[in-house]
Length: 318
Image: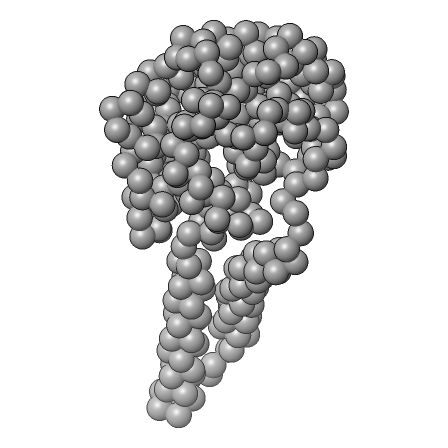
């Protein structure tokens, strides 16, 4: 380890969290100080519309050597904010934790102890999810288990973006340049030795969740399309089923006309066939369009994020 290289980097994405910044900084500082004095904390302001950036500046001014912030020009999304923080992290160990204090910073020393025992990835696994609706808990449980069945590698259940990774894991992660990020899937795909510590996720103390159902659905779809081609296989299977059903209907119509000489009404079967076939076609086109959209986003090769302010550039050069 080089002299100026911190032992620990803690990356904290924040979006519209003005009321919690002071408590957030204090609790993370206490957790980091219990491990080492050689650490850095990098807050990433993801285009907040309130006084989050102002409060971050106040908090970071108290310790300019160890507290830093990156501020985006606009909102680029939670996964991109985490990516930006990790891009600028210099520690041998990197911890990511959301800035809403639902994930307790006091768990960080326990996660670090697991790293010292030889684990390169340490997840914080939720035993309870306080303050969340039954619908959100059930849909999250279904998604994690469905994703685990669809992908070809082991993916941890009931974990979020509160985790510890070692520097070598991060270096491989930086090589994964996908525009539509699903970081927990990328880390699991790398396959490094991992473990987890259990905790009860707290309710939000202030404000409302920055991950409504629409964003959760988008993240879930990113996770599936980033690591599985199962949706394409499902669309293909549905196409075969529709063709088979259409063939059976055709055989039945010919039998009724030439052999049984029954009148073939036709209208109902025709309408059902057309609407069913049209639905499968639209679904298949939508799935194909989603994969094509991911290809286009990566081919464009635009930057993942645009930084407006960045105090990490003031750190001593390694």
